[in-house]
Image (cartoon, rainbow, N blue to C red; front, side):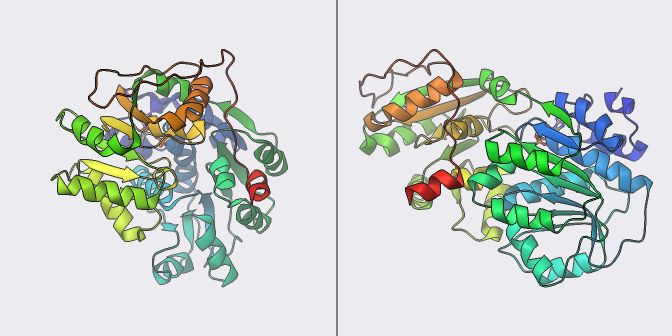
Length: 404
Ligand code: AMP
């Protein structure tokens, strides 16, 4: 029997959740759902992959499903603000699945696609609006959206907003919201800026902290392949000869690099596409869908575009380039080993990467085994990891500005 029945959720929501195959709430859902149903503000320190989307969206759907009103034109009863278009689409998809049959009016808005359908949907008044900051501000400025009907505000992935330089936009949006509202803030980490924002916008919040990062890492079989830079593509082909790697997500540093890898793979008749911000939204969505549907074996992505993407059954994550920020390493390898399954992550490392590798190992508190039994192995020594877990390096707007 579904353990979701323990919450005071509408029957139809429990049925939809069961249809999705969820019988047991995840830890974040167990803590968030009752608090949110009681109208509390919430501070959730958790990343994508913990089940946080359902944790915040089920109570919102429940609230509006139980209490239908005539919504004011050009307004919305709830706003979910999230940093990337992919996350926005994913959240909207989940909400539409969970609320099927309740007759709620929902819409997702982001840039890079036509604005008029968004304006038309908002004009009717919405129960749920999911948005990225840029297009949202645009719609506010043109008077196509107001917050007269707003009851619930969710700020998702607050630390990513900061990393991506959206913080001013977020603050500007918050300044336009009515003071009386229920507010939820989710962030994977709590840098000082988010701490201050949380104090500012939350009233006596329930605090929920989920240590998903270590859990995820335990389920991932990680390894490092040391090599010369010029051998990266040959090594990639060598790895992909193993047909057991059915769904492979490759991370690389630049958009240009991603496109080069895709071209090289296609030449070898390996189906692949790239996912990065240089592509139109439609092309990105198509690539992601084809990868989800297993029409593509390989997706080559940059960190920003792949942030939080939720694709089932990724067999292998390859770090073609090591990420500068150890937190991105954790996010990347967390794309495999979803929903309690085991996964595999291979990182390519060239001699210049030694410092980055040591930072990553220090951050996750373990040495990543080096595979020497591979045709392109190159010997070079690594510095020992520091025994004390170091806090991941955080890039803030301020430090970025300083570098400029
Ligand atoms: P999220 O952190 O919201 O991105 O969710 C991560 C993944 O977990 C998504 O694929 C969800 O569909 C799935 N999920 C969410 N809640 C549950 C649950 N209670 N049981 C099983 N899977 C879940």
